[in-house]
Length: 77
Image 1 (tube, rainbow, N blue to C red):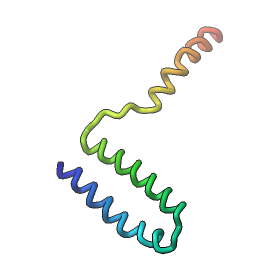
Image 2: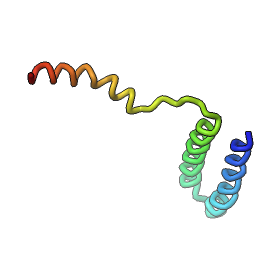
Image 3: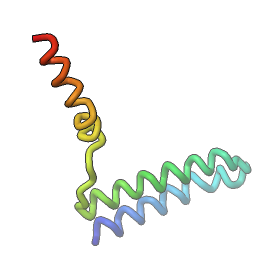
Image 4: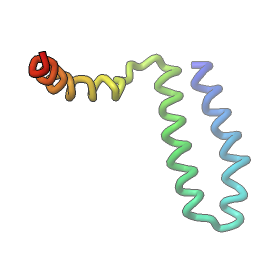
């Protein structure tokens, strides 16, 4: 739980530093992109800190292309 609190404190600090100039300059699009990336990064950090198993996308690609690879190997032998 200390890791989660530390992550949230760091995220709040980053938002306080980076989001204020974007808000003052009325850069709405940049603020949206910053917010989306910050939420995505924070979620990944929290998942890692809580030791939740997150599947690897490379495993999905392997499962999709493995039959094709086996078929090509059998064809070329």
